[in-house]
Length: 557
Image (cartoon, rainbow, N blue to C red; front, side):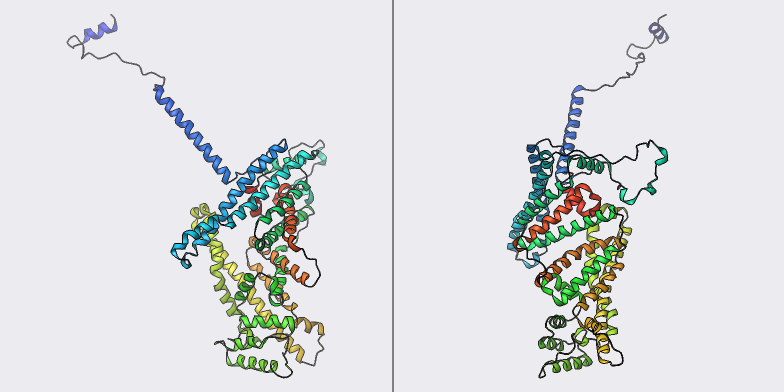
């Protein structure tokens, strides 16, 4: 009997609607509506296109790591590549300068009438400074890219033999050496795959002098777009970074290592700066001298007396009168200052030893021994908020992920760095104050006694203007209090100021030539030639900050 007839026989009283239906099989294939499938596919395509557009917009603002070098075959391609890079660099530079100007303008809102605030913001964004800054970066990137990529086309070079790969097997196993046996000068730095590919492109296409020529021409032309007052600062910073990269490359190739070289450089720079502060203040920026005088804590008239004595051997009586007018002058120091004033106003005038009385430098206390420790604490409190802003604000802006992952650790690191930086500056000021009083006390004691015959060279050194530079050198040893990773940056900060001061001092004495109206252009050309030569051939020898900035604006080529 068939199955259907058997089911009917087993349930004869059921109606046809009530009878059970035969079991149905679920299909193993997917059922979908074609119209919905097309819509989903179109959404996926639109999402992919949107992601591509986002990546393209991101690349315009921020260059990804590992970007390969662009292969250019003829001059028109070089011009197009340089033009695109220059427009991108100019736009980014304009945005950065405009944002900085807006931030500075908003800080002045309290001093500006309300109806003038919109004009202030408009000038901050579209003022000449933003366009000058954009023109400088745009011109540099355009010229550098055009020259660097055009030279291999105009003057083809034979590719050099690439360095041996560590993965190649040696034919003679007995001649193999371990990494520890390789001489220091022959060791290659560890670079990423993209950096190695870039180095291969450099060895294949260019020569070192290509980057030097391109950087010198582009830098000398680009710096002329800035104001004359800013060209000197820009040229100094570029020249110093070029010296830093060249020194690192030179010492690494020859296996030279100078222990604590950053501290030594900082000491030499501080010696020149402190000498200039008390002897040739016109060779330092006015804002920098004002900051240094404020940091030292001595009365301004006393500093003026030191400068006058170092220059002419005399001083202005009015500066002594200004010190006497202070409310914190104790009676003992007032008596000493009045005695020095009486000698200076006598006939003939006698201005005394080649330094002001210590009572004029610290009129609130008699003993020189009681000055360093209170001065240490006063400078520490004064510097703490300054360095706190320098350590905490960059952490919040550039290390947000690390801060959110471990806020207590990041706050502790920033706080400890602030303490060390404030202690470094306080130690510097206290050490120099101690040297200032000690050398004057030693000069007074040694010059007044007759038992020992002291060489005149020693007495002359203790009372000369060069002794202040020696005090700056000794005080700069306080850099050991600062973190090791910050010592090099601090040395790079004071180096351009000391070099500029030394150059102006030597030019005033007729030891060096005058550069006229093209000094900034010449210095920028030399500095950018060094920087770009290192960047294209040995980028690991530049500081991380400089290397990242150049990569974002220029790229591999």
